[in-house]
Structures are given as C-alpha cells and as structure tokens.
Image 1 (cartoon, one colour):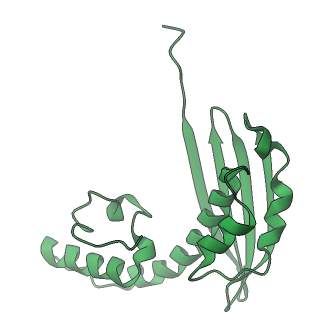
Image 2: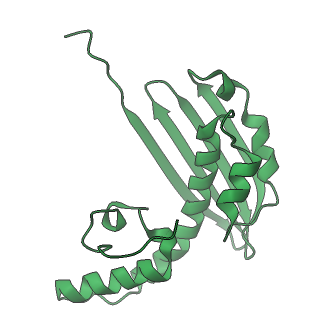
Amino acid sequence: MESILKFSRNRCTTVEQLDDQTMRSTCRLQDTLTEAFVEITVKLPDLEITRVEGEVRRTYQEECANSTESLRKVVGVRIGPGMLKIIRGLVGTPKDCKHLAFMVEECCHGIILSFTKDVLVHSPRPKAERESKKFYANMVKENIRLYNRCAAFAPGSSIVEGIEVPK
C-alpha cells in the first residue's frame, strides 16, 4: 500500500498582547506540500496593522515562492468591517498565492476573537442546555464573524442552527 497518496495539514493561529497598545497575531500553515507563516502586529485601540512579516518555506506553487513582498501592502489597513475585501485586493488575486491572503485574514480573525475571550470568560453559565445554546447563538448573531471560527460555531452545530449568514 505504499502508493496511497498521503496528505495532512496543520494550521495554527496565535495572538499575543505585547503591551497596552500592541498585539501580535501569527498564523502557521504546514501540510504535505506547503510550509508558511504570516505574522502581523496591530496597534490598539484602532486595530491598525503596523507590521507584517511572512515566509513561504516550502511550496509546490511557483506563485507562492516569492510572493511575501505583497504582504507589506496591508500595513495601514484597519481590522474591521470590509477588511477581507481590502486584504484580498492587496495581497491575493486568483493568479497570486492565495495561502498568504488567507493567512493574513486568519491573523486578523485571531485579533478579533481575542476580544471575544473576555466576553466568554465573564458570560453567565446557564445550567440548562437550552438556555446555554440560546446564549451562545445570540452571541454569534450579534457578532457574525464568530460563525464557523470554531467547532462549536461551525455549520451543522446545534448552537448555530437556523442562523442566517450574510454572503
């Protein structure tokens, strides 16, 4: 059975609070064919991207081999509404390396979700399952960016059942 194609992928996004005015988010991607990382530094409170670094260490796509220069274009972009369209316009077009644009987006989502942590830590913990689901479903409705960002809020989860996601 040596001829069976094998593929595995790991992606990890981390967020660190460096000081009162600075956060750093890093996304690492490693799979059978690709190894890359992107790191953004963000200034608080306006969530402006002040620094971007990245490297594609291994890839099968020629367009990814030397595409990290395009990352610098996102310096000055603010994390918030409309950022995905801006990032895709600056970093990723169909002929470019799509991995890098996706990884910048993941870093931005990580920053956004880090602010959600405090809400979750201080949220009430309803004992009844129905109340608990309702609480978290309302949280996702109020901040639709949470949808599909973790297993609990993924499509098919009973927590997000019936939530209309804008396209």
